[in-house]
Each structure stands twice: as structure tokens, then as C-alpha cells.
Image (cartoon, rainbow, N blue to C red; front, side, top):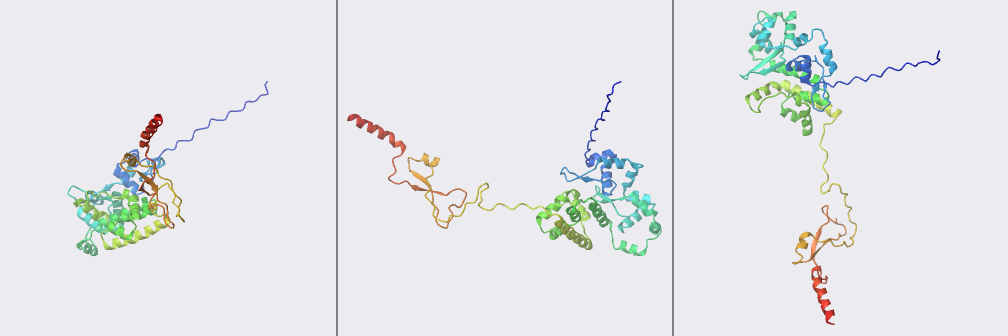
Length: 365
């Protein structure tokens, strides 16, 4: 019998699970079986959590783990679809068991708050409401007097005065949803600025670079308003920006506070300072001359000077620096031309005839 023992081999190491990258919004909506509008509303309402896009696109993405969590909930996807189902006036009135006229009065009074809106072909605003919230409104006992019978007198007086709180309530709700998405102090400031007219933003944020930074951060939250100056664009602006004086005053105060917090946390990017005037990139600054400079050797003639050598002869020299003055004004020495001295030897082209004459004279001797 052999005394040798067999050592059991170690189990093979398992490769780490590959990290699954987060999904873009369109892909995540398809994975969950939702329409894009349903998906966006689910994100705004907090039913689906998102993460910032690390690729620099500025948007939001959904982790694979979040897709698994949402799809693993009981009653998926019907329960999630019902949570984000938005209905218009007629469908909402039928859901609450009241007439469309009474439903409109409740909406104008601000008792039911719209969650979305769009413009039809007649340029009329169509408000949409969460079906889940309408059912909750009906279920609350203290709202029973608003669903049947005559409206209370104080509410009738407000209606007679022309009150319509739908747009303002939508803006207030939108601000809360945007602040939920904001991932930083500048993003929170941009969410508030999205509800103000640019004139009010410029009065509060006087630095143009800070305004540009706010505009870039909040670009994804800007609604489409159509062609600037068109009737649809003007109508969209009246809905998406604050109109009431007290609402504007409150938003201005909120923006002032949010920008102050953003500056304290991280200043907005500014351009770098330009290089000093007269300085050539890549060259060191010339020291100031303290005394007369020595003579500088002549510089070779330029191509133009060589081409016109038969008309004039010049030599380029640098000016000697004088005491207490700079030698040059730019990056290259300043040169000037002066006539050549009369004792200068003949030019090279005159030498061949002189050598030939000397040879003939020596031959005659």
C-alpha cells in the first residue's frame, strides 16, 4: 500500500460577473413595456429611479438593478401603468362620477392639480390629471360636498372673479418634480430658473457665465415652445413661466438663495485670463536694457534686396539700444536700412572682369 496522499485540487476560480451598463431612457422604457410618456412620468413621480449619465451626455439612465426591481413588483406592469395613467377632463369627470363642467370648476379652483398638458390643433390647452389622484379625491369624505349639490359661496365668488389656478398649480408641481431630479446645487438653481422669465433671471444672476452655466445645466428641462414669436410659443410661455406677481416674487427669492448656495459649493466655470499684450507664446520676456548695447553684426540681405542689387546696395543692421530704453517693441529685432559706405569693396559680380584684365597685363610683360 502506498503512503502517498492525494491533495484535492482547488476549485476553479469563477470569473467576476460582468458589470451591466445602465440603460438609456428609450431602452429602459422598452424593457419595462411602457410608452415613452408613461416612462417619463414614472421617473418624474419617483416610481423609477435614475442615475446621471457618466458618458457626459447630460441625461439620465436607469441601472439594470432598477429594471429588475420594478419588473419584479407585484402586478407589474399593470399596476405601474395605472399609477402613471393621465386622463383629460371628460374621462376624469366620468371617473369621479360628476359632470365635465363641475370637474372644470374644481380644476380652476385648484382642488385637482394637472400633471401634464398639451396643445391641440386649435391651440387650446388640454390638461391631464392623474387617475390615481382623482380616485383619492373621491374617497375622502370631506370632499363629498364638492361633488354633489351647490358649490359653497366662497368658491363661487372665486369662480365669478375669473380664478384659474391650473397653470400655476402645474408649475408648482413641475418645480417639485424638477427638484427631485436635480443632482447638485447648480441643478437646483436651474430648476427654479426654468420657471422664471429670462429677464428676471438676468436681474438676479448678473454674471453672464453663471447664466450660461444655469442654461446648460437646465437644458434638459426646457419645454419645447415652437417657433419664437408664434402664437403657440407665446401661449406656451404663459403656461411654463410664472405670471402672478406673488409667484414671481417667491421664485426670485428662491433663485437668489439657490444661486448663493451653488456659488458657495462650487463656482461656475469662467474662461481663463488672456496672455499679456505684446507677449509672443513660447518666448521669454526680454530684460530691460541698463546700458548701451554693443555693436550688432550686419544681417544678411533679404530676397528683395538681392534681386535689386544692381540698383542699390544696402545692408540691414539692428539699431543699438540706448540707455533706459527697450531694444525692441515686438518679438523680433527692429531693422533699418542705410546706404553702404563708399569705401565698400566692389560687389562679387565685378570681380571676374578685374581678374581677366590683370591676367592680360601680366601676359604683356
